[in-house]
Length: 459
Ligand code: ATP
Ligand code: MG
Image (cartoon, rainbow, N blue to C red; front, side, top):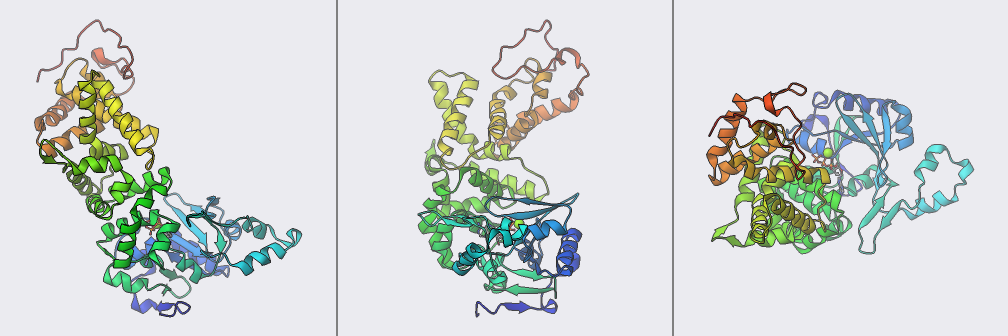
């Protein structure tokens, strides 16, 4: 295909109809078009609609500048430092509207930008001439790319061919600059351009390749796959908060187990979690560590069934056995139960900190899930109502039940607590529940003595 001449697939030859779009996206496309702008749908939504899948969200691209978009839509907010984007806020969704961008700095354009006298520029033009707009690190990593471009340049700067298709509101056709339509039909994830260069520009694209392959059941094209094998170590160069977000997408979107297998095959897993990955390769008491895969399988079934799984449950399930073993080590060296959990989590966080940054709030919730496990063995133990009311009780019980299903260990314990909870519902806030109305003591703080012991049913 001549890259300058896109393949145009007319409306009659593809399955996307306007009824499939969100009404907000359709109206926004029309408003741009009616004001003389080019307006396309792009990215995941076009890919998913062509595959008969429901898009997560709708992204638009246009030749209107951010300033022009803002003037057209009252519900518009401009966001982003690296990419200047418009967000259109609706009651039930946010649409992203981007201006066509180029990946290559156009020197002529840069020179022209400097030649324009500031006084002669409109506000929109000034807004768009923030300098430097295009920046690469010494290693070739893309730090900033905010250069406006043509539709073709915009398609070519995208990551994979299947993610670079445009749906044109002017005539309802699909515009294909990169061969995405053919790759979609044959089920292939292929970078646009030289894979080694594209992964050097942004190593996170390697994780995205894995995610799309797993999610869509696609294969990774050979050169793209080889480049990932050769460069997987570079994933550690990406920012730790961004990698955390990508990890959640890999494991919580319904194909986590498949993603996990691909991450391990490509070396990405070892680069992201070196210590944990070494441990996974070893055995404990002659048993290989299979719990991670089994846990991800269970998470996948829930997500595919329409349930949302929280990050803290994912992390607890992924690292649970690893944390248990670390904890046992600390116990053997004299730590008490809670100290052992805290030390194990601290050690894990230290290990992750170089690559993946787990937010403190989520760490706190993981600490509850893991830390409460020993408390479940007392049925019901002292002050069961205050245990039931502790933040994170439900997640901890969920974890107990899943681990019971996977390992067969203490399988009846989760059932016992579910039954107990059914018979002893938690009192609504503000209403005393017998002896247990006082707020639960903060973990690790001194407990207040109570005058009476709860009666509680025996196991
Ligand atoms: P999802 O269904 O997960 O939202 P998506 O393809 O829409 O998948 P987004 O992260 O929403 O992915 O990005 C939207 C589009 O922006 C992509 O389809 C792709 O064209 C482009 N894009 C996103 N991230 C990158 C990247 N790191 N490098 C190049 N292009 C990217
Ligand atoms: Mg998307």
